[in-house]
Length: 150
Image (spheres, helix red, strand yellow):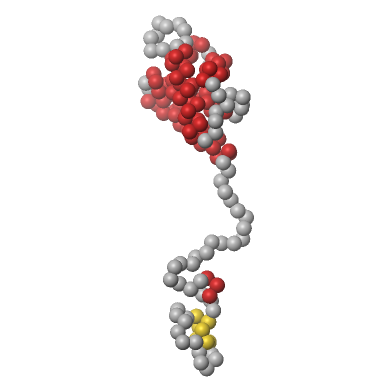
């Protein structure tokens, strides 16, 4: 994915007046600062790829909304806006990345009726725990902790 493609997608979805405010510190400026926008796009692409472990792609319609959240977050962060605004944007972006990751990498599950072994080193194997040791008279003495003289 290219930075220019993401910047173009951002410009289509976010109005120019809003982008002018987000990319400039000077309130009298009337144009979008493309350098700042491109930097935010690059950072959003990098962070998305790092978190999701998938290369960001503007042709994938599932990636674009998350990347735009990332661009908005980075623009607000660069501008050092109110902490609540930056925190809210951060939570939305990182939450969207986490949600996307859980879809891409489904957690492992099983429907097996088997359970993991509880065996420990230095003890009898699970299959032998319920076996009884027989005494010389032929009578069971119950489960034994040691094998003794059988």
